[in-house]
Length: 64
Image 1 (cartoon, rainbow, N blue to C red):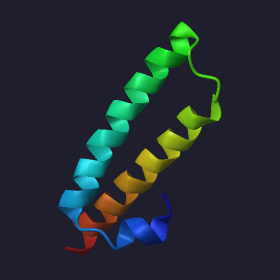
Image 2 (image 1 turned 180 degrees about the horizontal axis):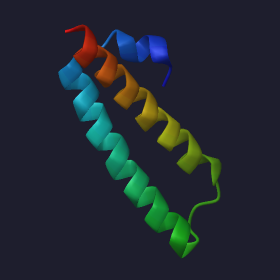
Image 3 (image 1 turned 60 degrees about the horizontal axis):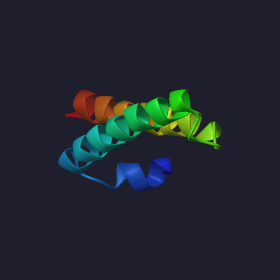
Image 4 (image 1 turned 135 degrees about the vertical axis):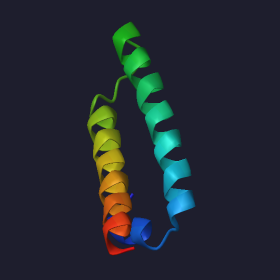
């Protein structure tokens, strides 16, 4: 997800998106360990999305 899209969302939506992303990451790691996942880049991209969400949440905290 792009940063511009994330900045337009409210903090509640971002928190929900964060929890969903973390759940997906756990599931993806389990699938990767069992050898079911072919797209290894998905883990890296999901981690970056989580980092973007956390960064925007921290920016919202600082400005408020």
